[in-house]
Image 1 (cartoon, one colour):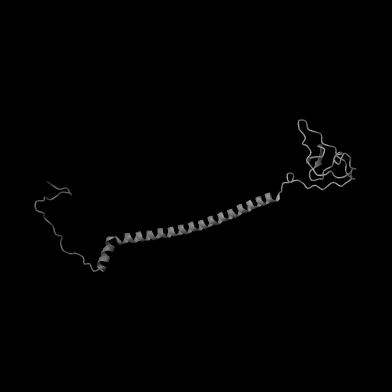
Image 2 (spheres, helix red, strand yellow):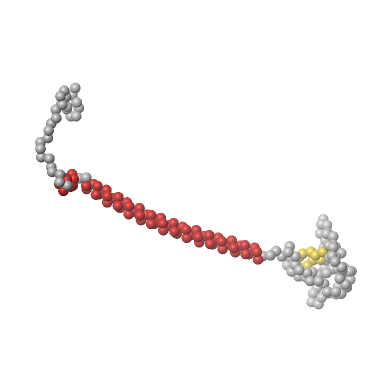
Length: 179
């Protein structure tokens, strides 16, 4: 147990254990020592610390009569800080953190499903592009073009090619014009 000091009406101090009722010194009740309680050992006053001034006695009401029972004291707020608000704060913070983690996990899961759907649609579009490119390559072959032309009613040209002559032009050799 930790020891606190209690100031008596005459300015002296007595040592008491925290949570227990104070023990009055011999001068506490008008200079007359109270009889010791049965089953308890009277305590000695705490020795004064060097270099430390004592506080003056607090102003109190009338001094109780000799032999009167001492009034019950409530523990001060400075000695016993309330723990319930702190515990509720810690529990609230933990619960808030847990809820935020669950929400974050849910959002990430939804995003992963969305990414998976987008990958599937991208794969389908890529396959569709490849199919269209294959159709384009087969449609651009000379045989396919001729078949489509016959189906469309176009007849092949069986006439001989005509050679055009331009007045003043000279024949060329291998694509290079001769001057």
